[in-house]
Image (cartoon, rainbow, N blue to C red; front, side, top):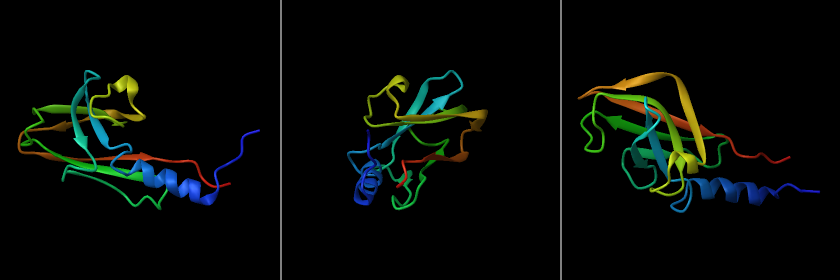
Amino acid sequence: MPTPFNPDGYADLREYVVSEDGWRYLAVINQNDEIATRVDIVGDSRGEWGDPANNPITATVKLGGGNSDVDPPLEVAGAALLANEQDTLGESIHDARYVSTLLLEAGGEIVLKHTVELPEEG
């Protein structure tokens, strides 16, 4: 019979998710269900993870229509967490598709928040 992690194990898991070795890339999914760009949540100034002591944990990424890796107008249909920069959507750890698309125009800006809930003690 499986047993739960001890409290330190849950904290270690949350720390791993937000670490340089963890789930560090947010793939921005366009209206054609393709990756429009990938943002390094840990290493790019446009991204950041929330406090790993919280659960759920939220990654926040700010995209601007003037970013060199964004080709506006861009219809954002969702986002996915990737462990490696080269991963495909099929290899994503977690993805979320939006009910309607968000339009990023030249000169515009959008903030994407991607939230994951990890196992709890108990």
